[in-house]
Length: 285
Image (cartoon, rainbow, N blue to C red):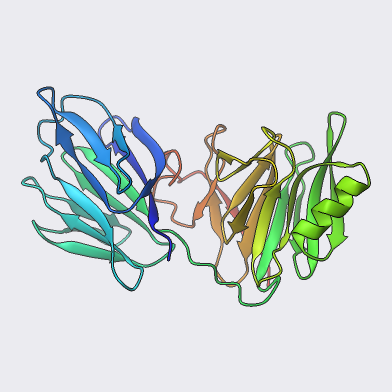
């Protein structure tokens, strides 16, 4: 089971992002501390992230995000002023001591004392056989073309040739395909393909060139890929999509452009920007 959660905080009134999306170790607690009522988020590994001062209406222990034995996330209201869950069907107050369970991959939006807290539960890989049912959607900023490519026994490489980035296909698992390309003298920036154990991975080929869900990949670092994941290579995007899991919505923030679940009324789970004008992506089955 994953033991992290993505969390961001935004001002309801101004829409300003107070805390960009952070990947935090569970359990996570939101509250305040100090004479100046500094807002803070504390994680299970001891990390503390602050998001400004003057939050006197926050309780010192305001809300928590924990993990149930079955892997679901549990959001608990510990506050004096209340936490409200926001969804497309309306707003529901948790009540002090009240909880909300979130399934793996779900995104929850909660409002409290003028803050909007977005919580995204870690996803559980749904691939049981290599290449099924994930597709790689190639969104080239330079050409504007959109291509959906099967990853059934095939790896996709993005290779640098001078200032250009070219796509190459290689049979087999990603790690072996990367080694083959290197033996040929190619400068592979990233390889996306089967991991040999039923999943799909992205492997960094060059440091400082490629990011996965806005986090830079190290050389030879392998990260699991799942529905709605995005790899950015010099402004060109590789997006992992599943025909079975439905379409995604791309953030319009040019510094973000990450995929989100198709919830037009919600905010981007990475930067907090409203998704109403986002671009839809899907794979035709």
